[in-house]
Image (cartoon, rainbow, N blue to C red; front, side, top):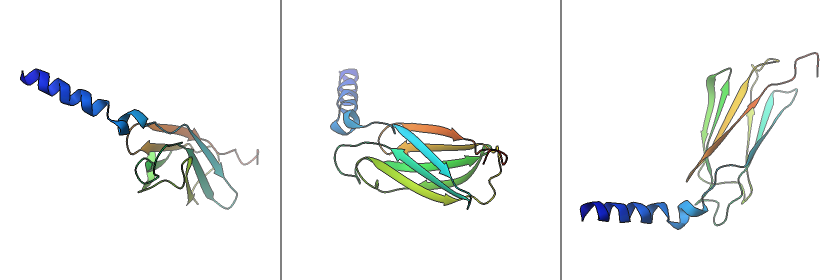
Length: 120
């Protein structure tokens, strides 16, 4: 009987409306300009309120070392989350990994390598 109750509770939690409508980020677009600004646009279409289902965390790693960790309490709008950072130490061919996490379910990572100085 106890096993049946635990199974029923877990089933209800897994099928709750928030979980069913949750989705990880769709895509991450990255731009780095000559002044050192890194712009991150995360596509995360949601249904409902931007303070209930949103991108909750953004982590930026430079060559494997975490350099930025930002938390959010809401999303900019029902499609996007955006962040802009100044990375003055970024050199050509550095690897920048960006990971965006949904507050309910899932995450997405994207790796960005700036153009070498000869390509700009």
